[in-house]
Length: 285
Ligand code: G1P
Image 1: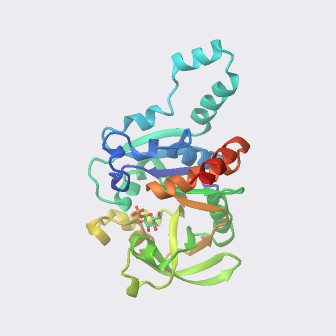
Image 2: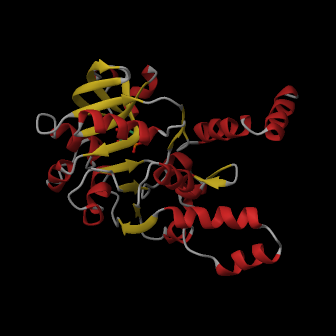
Image 3: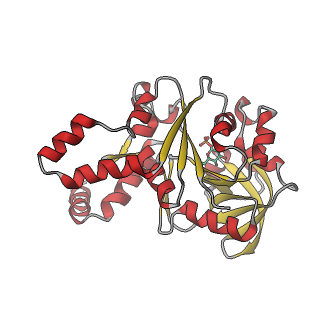
C-alpha cells in the first residue's frame, strides 16, 4: 500500500542552535531564503505524501502559519506582477495537507512520533527529520519507499559516519543483502564508541510499520532519559522486516551551525551567481 502520511517532529529545544532558537523555532531557520521545514514538506510532497503531521511544541505556531495563506502578501505579489514568487508561495501550501500536533513536554523523538498516531492511524507511514537535509533525485525518502516495496516492513535511512559522530547518533547492526540495502539485526541509540556495533548511522528518514506504535505506547525511557524511536523500531525486529537503506545523495546535518553552512554552500553551488560570490569571498581569506 502507498505511504500516504508523514510525521515531521520539530518540537526539540534546538540547543545546538542557541541563541537564535531562544525565539525562532529551528524548523524556521533558513538555508539561504528557505526554512528547513519547507525542504522537509517539499520532499514529502515529491514522494507522494498527502498529509504531514508536524509535531510542534507550544509557541511554535509560527511554523504552522508558514503553510497558511497570507492574503495580504499574496495580493501584493499579484499587484506587483511577481507571479514567480506567488506561484512558489502557493505551491508549498497546496502541496500537502498540514496537520499540527502539540507536544507539551520534551520527552523524546519516540514520544513525539507517538503523539501523531491519531493522524497516522494503522498504516505504514514516513518520518522526516528536517535537520537532516539530503539532496537527490529520487529523494532519499523515495529511495526508502522503493526498499519498502521490495522488502516490506520498516526501512531506515543509513550512512557510514566518522567515529566522533557515533555517540550522538542511532547506530545500526546490519548485514548487507543487496546494493545499498542491509537487513537490520539491532539498533542502539547514542552508544559509547566501544559499544557501537559499527559505523552505520540512522539518518532522519524512516518508513515505519505501525507496529512501532505498540512499542511506543509502553513509554519506556531510553538514552538520555527520553522515549526513543530507535528503541521502538528495534523492538519490532522479529515481528516485521527491518531494512536499512544507504541512500544516495549529499547529506548535511543542518541542525547545527556548521552543517547549516555546508547546506547553504551546497545550495549556492548550483546557482552560478552565488557560486561565484562564494569563490570570490573564499579567495579573499
Ligand atoms: C535522532 C535519532 C537518531 C538519529 C538522528 C539522525 O537523534 O534519535 O537515532 O541517528 O536523529 O539525525 P537526534 O538528532 O534527535 O538526537
